[in-house]
Image (tube, rainbow, N blue to C red; front, side, top):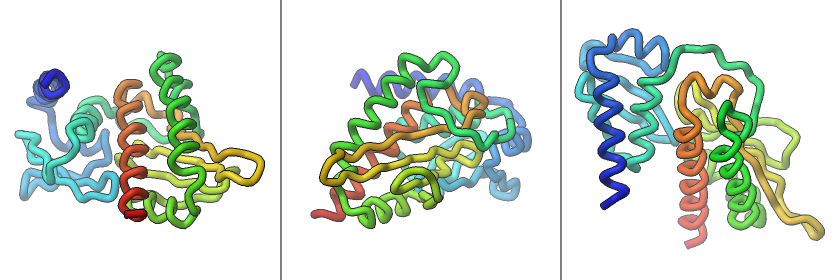
Length: 205
């Protein structure tokens, strides 16, 4: 109940901030397509096609409540800044040493425990199902998730071998602060980790 109340309070605040905004301006700042004929925003996130009605901001299909909130916050906060193409850890975000740094450690532990010992193809399938795109990088496996149009999240995984345990890290583009807060960034990273684990568990069952 407490978590639901916190979500509802933050959702209402986000709706109040979005009220009266120009949808064309939101489209420009977020990269989310606005369709005037139906008064809807349309986007893809975590492999799902999502519709946001305007001005009600009703989101369909029904999402995890924190995914829902991240989309509203992105619509409010995004300022259309250009992506830099440079990666940074969550802890490197301005003001993110505590929350972001904590997530960086959680990510390494989660990947080591839940993904680092899995077959690479299984992890690839799980990530692709969430809209991930395989990239070449300095890890055994690199995936970029276009979580929101201007908000890519990169996951790098080093799989275990006979001597070393598997591990991994998530990264953001250095422009991330122009689109979501540190708290929202951690929510996004956590959602992705949880969904990858669910996909892997579904495959094993």
